[in-house]
Amino acid sequence: MNDPGPHPDPSTDSGHGPSTPAGPDVSERDRLDREYGIDRHVDDPALHEPVMIVMLTGWIDAAGAAAAAMDQLTRACESTPLLSFDDDRYVDYRARRPTMELRDGLNTNLDWATIEMRSGRSPGGRDMLFLVGPEPDMAWRRFSRAVAVLAVEFGVTQMVSLGAYPFAAPHTHPARLSVSSPSIEMLAAVPFARSSVDVPAGMAGVLEHALHAQKIPALGIWAQVPHYVSAMEYPAASVALLDGLREVTGISIEALGLRAEVDAQRVRLDRMISDKPENEAMLRQLEELHDLAPDADASGGEVEELELRSGDEIAEEIQEFFRDQP
Figure 1 (cartoon, rainbow, N blue to C red):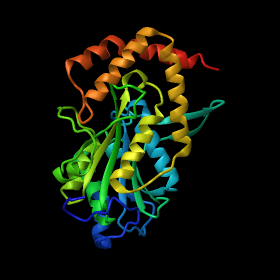
Figure 2: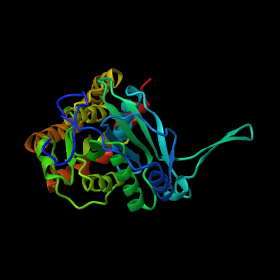
Figure 3: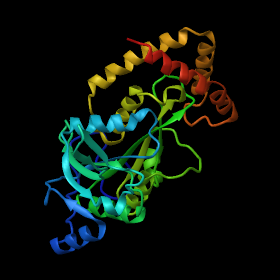
């Protein structure tokens, strides 16, 4: 990467590089923890130049592809809780009510939505941090400052967020990735599609700026999910995100079970679409549009018209098809 600040060589998963910067002294750290609502479960984690992966629920994640990719990562890296954030400062429980576990009338437990940071180690030996949980409902600037402070303290060398969005794309092609970053150098270093659009931001986009301001390379990787399957699981997009993460950081996760699901779902989708000539015709159009725009999101009127004409109808048919399967 040709980005200012400390960072790993993305061609390897070794994690060697500049030494981790010293964090704040204990009294200053305690003050910051109180200010930002940080509850530490591990007082002094032994981390060497970790990569931080971000996937906060509540923003766009078509087919749950980013959540599934993050689940693969946290399990493969054997992550454990490192710290959590004060829920009462960041979570609106009228919007994210805790789940009450009721068993024969007995209120056995309340399951609260919690934002936490987990630590782990990749199969290749790289230290990892995972920021997971719901997007904060409030105090976004405070939260982004808190994450930036922690990133500096732990010596984070790179931040990557994961997401997925519905798009007029065919399931017969690998899921295409797009990228966002405040860094021109980071954008130039990756081969993913780059869009030009004004959209509401998610917390991951805010964190890109917060870490970039600390000279920590930060980018978001987004997978395009065929719009007609965006309401169901789509493992091909999760696999694409894992492969994109490997390209950016050198961190490799096998996820063999997830990759096997890609082929199985492809067979089922092919079978469903082949039953109706109009669906096959739509698929051919999507493939043509996909091939015509290899380096950018196709956002012209032709794609929008095709999505409006066919997306909802074929999505309903596909979902009904899968519901009827034994």
